[in-house]
Image (cartoon, rainbow, N blue to C red; front, top):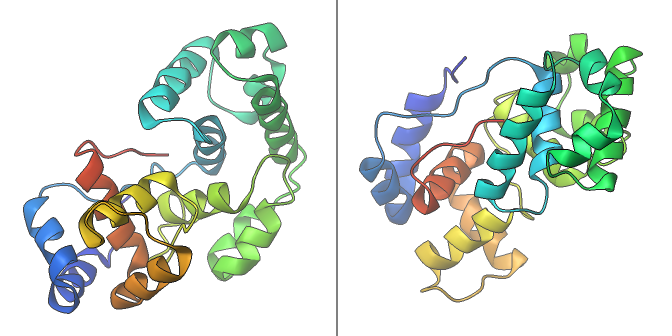
Amino acid sequence: MTPEYWEQATKELVKNDQVMGNLILGIKGTMLHSHGDAFTTLAHSIVSQQISVKAAESVWHRLIVSVPEMIPQAVYNLENDIVRGCGLSQRKTDYLQDLSLHFIKNDLNETIWHEMDDESIILELTRVKGVGRWTADMFLIFHMLRPNIFPINDFGLKRALSIQYNDGKPVSKKEMYIISDLWRPWRSVATWYLWRSLDPLPVEY
């Protein structure tokens, strides 16, 4: 599943921001993609918290090899030692257990997420242990394909903004918000291209 708005978004971003326009024109042939499974997206995001993209993909690959099927019940049934053996900390192992249980019990309003605004979905998701704002932002970008998400606490985004907009010097949150105003209402798309500026291979959650 790919966003219907992508072509319009890229055209407007190229028009409104020269730096972003150069990135978009230099990165062609790929776009944001959702595989359509909420549980997998959230589980993958939890695995990826606070580690490098390369390390996260290595751990995630070991996990999906270890589980019979990437569904809540199968992940919940995995023995703790198996999950830890994939490279997950005990804390993240507990998070995956709690996430699985929420889906098993149908505690999340998945059927009406498409009717809810971004902040309402974030509020619901952050009731799950281990799901904070960053993880919820990843979910809104990669699963819901919401167009205007700006994950202010993402390390990769901060690094890319520093390189592309501030000569490699750190950027404050205030500066990040000011820059991102150029991209509204397509901040998810701009963020995706900034990630690609660091690593041309797109990451999917």
